[in-house]
Length: 139
Picture 1 (cartoon, rainbow, N blue to C red):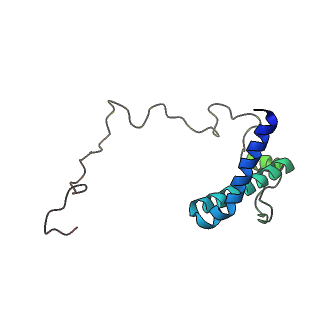
Picture 2 (cartoon, rainbow, N blue to C red):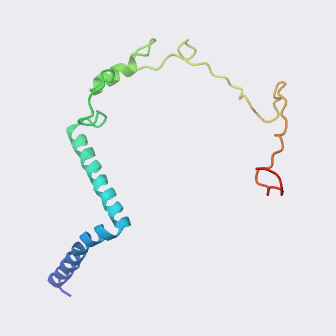
Picture 3 (tube, rainbow, N blue to C red):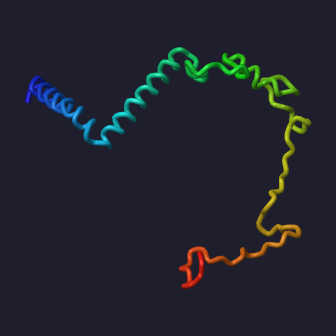
């Protein structure tokens, strides 16, 4: 089989399938909803590619309006993220043992062999979940 006959055979098969699309769209609900979902996915993919190329991947979607409290540029996001750090420079972590570092508890709250310090554990109350109801009883 040569490349030309293979190409013409594939082209003929694709044309037959394309001729079936309108009838399948009208009569087959599964095909209809799958087609709608595929078109929506392609639209969202195209929007994502356009945003990626434009450079505002994390920015608001076009037409959604801008929020006044959210930063729009990358430098504003970086500055807003570092505004909460009060001690030290933004590039250095706080020194160990400093008041800005959260305290670390070396002992876990629950460990094997450790007492529960006065907590009494009792079994759960009995219920009839998962059992067949008896005749004459209300559910």
